Amino acid sequence: MITCLSRIITKCSNLNPYPLASFDEHVAQTKSNLAFLSSVNPKINNYLDWQVTTCFYTSLHLVNAHLSTYGLQYRKHHDVNYGLNPDVQLSVSKLPQDEYDAYIALQRLSRRSRYLVNEKELHSTAAFFTYDKHIAKAIRHLDKLLNYFATVYKLDIKPVNFTCPDLKQSDNLKYFHLV
Image (cartoon, rainbow, N blue to C red; front, side):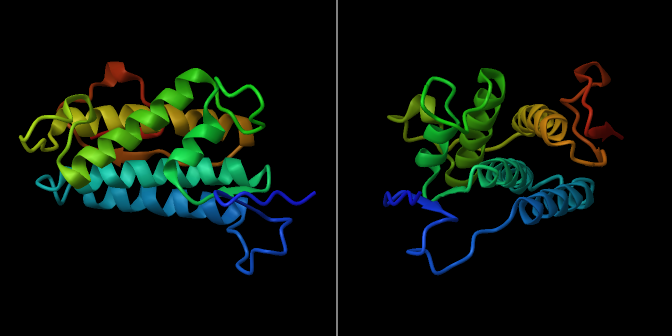
């Protein structure tokens, strides 16, 4: 069966001359992004925007690994969101509500850090910067997604060291050891 919508690329389509990244390649990129995040975190405390963005792209590779198990790859973020949305009854790749919400929150935090915008205040002319509370939120969301995908796909993802004054041991993070 060939699915040929402009927004979806499938592995079974001969219309796509470019091979899709595999599940294992996306997982390898996830692990690489985590290692990068852990290595830069203690060195670049003034660049929280890049750390938040790295959290989002780490989650994006987890999601793309997940989608690859269905032979799917989407071209646009809103199409990925639709494919993951638990309210889309016909979606074969939907996530549980909590994990979907965590992914969407990471996407919004990343957009804030990259464009200095807050989607809740679109009419504001103020710049919205990234602070410790935002990286803490991003880490909590990413930890939730790492836990979900590692459990579902039996991934061997090692915890990494991380420093953030707004994270506490009581957050019970599984993939981030607070130092």
